[in-house]
Length: 116
Image (cartoon, rainbow, N blue to C red):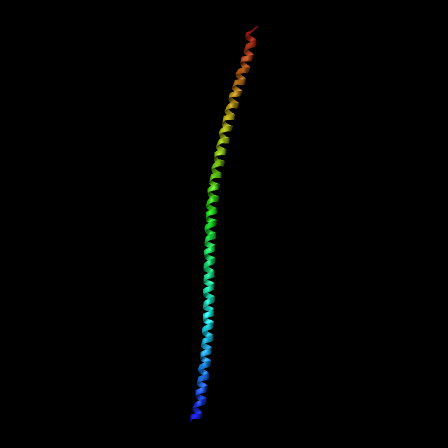
């Protein structure tokens, strides 16, 4: 009977070793997959932070560009108003000049008639 239990014990021992090695390999694969997942998550978080920083920078640039646009629009509006004011003043001056020319012509026309 001793001889019959020895092969069974060896078979159970071999089966136990095979199961242990198989469990170890499975555990190693699971740990490797876990490490890969952690690495991917950390990398994704870093990319997200970098993208958020870029977005913040671009938003700041956009705000600066908008403020510059507003100031440029104000300058253009002021320029248009000044141009319109100058044009109005020029028109007024032209009208005054024409009125003075007419007065001068009427005075010059009246002066020779009064001198004879």
